[in-house]
Image (cartoon, rainbow over all chains, first blue to last red):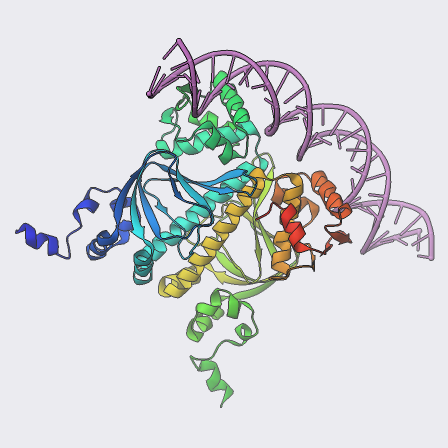
Amino acid sequence: MDAQLKILDIHEVPLVCRACDARHSGICSTLTPLQLTELNKHSQRRAVEAGTELIGQGQQVHSYSNILRGVIKLSKIMADGRQQIVGLQFAPDFMGRPFLGESLMAAEAATDAELCVLPRKILERMISESSELGSRLHNQALTELDEARDWMLTLGRKSAREKVASLLVLVAAHADPDRLGACAFELPLSRADIADFLGLTIETVSRQMTKLRKDGLIHIENNRQVYVPDLDKLAVTAGGD
Amino acid sequence: MDAQLKILDIHEVPLVCRACDARHSGICSTLTPLQLTELNKHSQRRAVEAGTELIGQGQQVHSYSNILRGVIKLSKIMADGRQQIVGLQFAPDFMGRPFLGESLMAAEAATDAELCVLPRKILERMISESSELGSRLHNQALTELDEARDWMLTLGRKSAREKVASLLVLVAAHADPDRLGACAFELPLSRADIADFLGLTIETVSRQMTKLRKDGLIHIENNRQVYVPDLDKLAVTAGGD
DNA sequence: CGCGTCCTTGAACTGATTCAATTGCGGTGG
DNA sequence: CCACCGCAATTGAATCAGTTCAAGGACGCG
């Protein structure tokens, strides 16, 4: 078959999408090859390093993104500077709040990351055309809502120790899904980020980490490398359920 | 026109729906008269009094509801009894987590309330048939997500005083939308509920209420009747934005 | 080596909790 | 009608978990 013809074939998935994780597990999995080709014309890969602000609170939204690699933190800031991280997004999540022109929070790369950036208008048109894409996004919104509410329990009712354990369990679940017993991972967040996610100060986070370490629940190397000998036990100190 | 014929007319909106608020502002506004008639065959009005548990955490979901009157609180409970309210739903909100067999939290009537109960299967079929209904629910999910994240900031970073003020502003917004300056309303929550919503104890809530009262920011009568002379001022002590 | 950044540790402090009374109010029965 | 009860809310005093402020350590980089 002629390569030239292949490119024009409507059944053909664009080259860059073929190797892409989001193609299979992200929102793109709902799209037809034709839609993928269309979207691909306007989408753009973007590699960013840790700390890059992707959008600021109150800024106009011009694009959505698929997260291909890395972790993005979503945060809200008060007038006096107090900050709360209200969500973490891992690959291959879709990032963005559909149907709203202005961003209600800031998005910043917590780690080095890679995105597939989709212009707002194009995606919104596709949502209206593909009910499957719409329901996929609906489901992601519902999942994020479930997670947000879980975290509300953590923020409102757990002790500092339980909060820190909860965070470690959360990260472990994303790093090593369905891995019970022992597991190891790299923390995608600095102590400051962890504090902002848990509604604590850096110092309290640090103290609780040391305590968990001294209690043998975790081992830490180079501040970021964490090894959990017994994830169940950690989950129990995170608050049970 | 013959009454008998009217009932069979596919353009006719069911009688009980015609006087219903949810018909115009809730999810039902997206449905055709035919769909409304179909849904109405299986739906059922239910009046409940304050304190009634509508569904328990971990229970199987058999129905969704439109809230016609009253306030419903959604809460999570830990194994040891600690509780956190993770959402409040006001009429004419849709209540329920689509596409999940088991409820992740408890729902309880905070005040006397009236519901329009829709069997799960029927509604889920309609969602798959009506993309407009689907996108309506998608939008409600996104709104609830926005609210949950706002509340995460409140739970994680605000002082007790700011938390109580935030709650009052939230309730005021629902009781008297777009009413600036002064406003009055009845609190739909007990002090215990407020504490569970704010991640505080009853005593702290009570103390902060008296302080806000003594500072002239609010007036309270019979524990539940609140008058706010200057909503803007209250919003500022709630944390600014 | 010196410098900056991030993390840890210590000691004093404080805002919220805990525990314990007390008040206020609606309902019930004498 | 008033006395009594039960429940929700308030108030006070002691305690404590987490913060604040300040100092010191670890690591990477020029």
